[in-house]
Length: 359
Ligand code: BGC
Image (cartoon, rainbow, N blue to C red; front, side):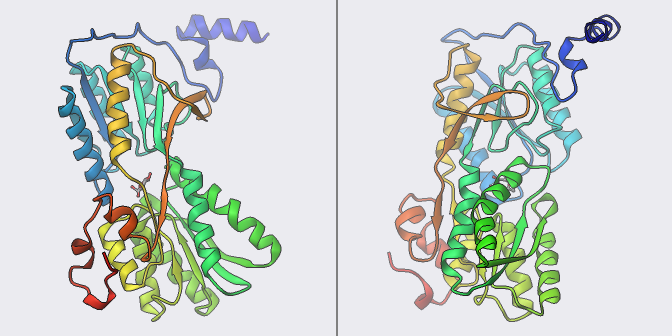
């Protein structure tokens, strides 16, 4: 019976069997394009957004690396629209890019970009965020579950109260990173809840990673608990700043611990002021350079050396997962300032000099 259905699928739809099996992607790949060793590679970089400060850095560094190694790069930004991102990727394929690097807005929907690219023999790299249920060629990112663990552990280690009331502010539920971060946060918090050390008083995702969503989530939690909140596990710096704004409304900024991620300049200033507690520093250069270098290799049909994989629901995707670091006011000089990610002068501009950490 199953064979009959499969055959029917093949005949009637004219598609590969994959299209008939729920939860798998159709893999009717065209022959792989392969550029010669001296031919110039055209890279398409499809970005969801430039909203958070880090993405501008990703764009600049991808362009810089491409220039350094003589590749051409076309960057398109979809500004949070799935249909726009698909259209832009299709246009780049029509224009004949040899390889696509995609930072997806929605990890599920972007699978159709992989499908369209593969039909034309064009490999696809999933950048920073995982493209789910697709035959994507490489995933390059940081260790996202570990980042969630670092955020929760830092707050748990510093909260100094038992039981402590925690609020969790997740990122966009359509971004796989938000789900992985939550997984990491719960890896640490669940045992603490079971021990009776922590009570989770709110646990919600902030749509589109919006600060205004985070503000609402934290305001509601403060109202419901009569301001009895001890720590906010905010998943990135944008949502952390929304959380800080809600706390400021109740004169609690600096008294409640708040995590973050990205080492945005605005959040580093809050960390120096004592209103945000920590952030996760993810060096962007190895990510951007790694993606461009891998893109060129894939376009030339060379193999990649990866040691890790991540399951995207369709297959175990070869992965490069970079190391993140926890940053607070005590180590920001020896970490991201030392790396030249931001200067101390930038961070401290406009703040009382006595608050500024030493070189
Ligand atoms: C990225 C974060 C970023 C967030 C919002 C996540 O997928 O990993 O660095 O803050 O998206 O753009």
